[in-house]
Image (cartoon, rainbow, N blue to C red; front, side):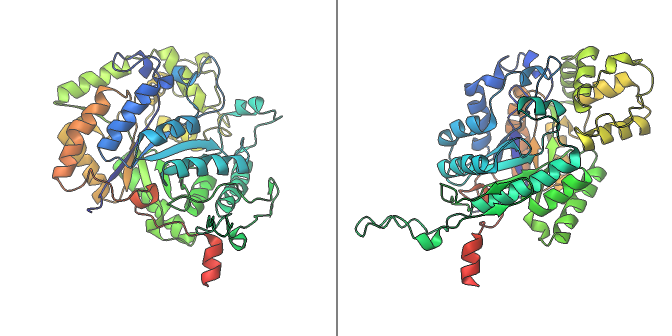
Length: 441
């Protein structure tokens, strides 16, 4: 079977990636809690040969939150519901290491991995929003560096628990009344600064060994964490040159962490605005941009800076000096916003509106966007993309119906699946059990 040369995932963001996507006539206004909508998007992606669907998440809301974040499905619940309704596509969900117990997460993800036949993935996040602490009986949101220290232990425990049982531990020999081989059951007995977990986990491994680890941290500590642990990383993309640099940097860090460069896949975010002509593309862009008011754009921008109130500043003055505001939230994102505003001499109004509907290299006719994707693959800027349409309606369908066939025709995409498991589909090796490896040595 032919392997794909470019792979796609799609972000299941309810109505879409735009903060006011719910207002579009293109999608159900209740899309964030509309199971039929999620199922339709997922089935279309699977029919097109997409590698995975991805559900993002957050643990804190207030009246200034993105509207469709105020009521949305919990990732593992919706993925568990989608698992028996699909057969080949990967199922990836966001879970916080700062506000979850490793044993519970290990068991939940392993269950989805078993139900789906080895198609589960975990987007590991440390939770940027400070208000999250108030929902989990915590006095204080851990600072950025500490959150990654916690994450380091958390993932070590989860992956350790996933190896509790060697792959042939459950013999289930009814004739001899022997359900399992006790020599192939392993306690973890982890004792760290943040977690103490005995094990073993009460579920065995799946067809892919362990769920895939995704990560999106772009800060210095976040990217180091990803280089050490992630099978795939999400990046913000930006320009071709920025994407090439991010790609090269992540691959190099993986090598420095003792891994092969091909052991980690890089997926920039892809939010295309496409059409039959340049005129239609511009019309669609203006339509999406006009879904939001300036006041809403300021609230959207403020979310990245721990819901900072931007209404106190002059809209048409240069982007304000904020000091350390936002440093303990979306650190890499806020650093990038401040950098871009300064370098491009943007006003606060321009910065806010740009964040809600940013123009990207992936604006153009169907053929132009397909050719841009090919360029990014050829020039070492991506292994694939996580498709995040502004609105999960006509733009999404057009991408599948018009852009994908062009990539197939050019020999850069294959709508068939390379493997029954997500790990195999991404071209990654089966995750060997650590105890079985020791036995062979």
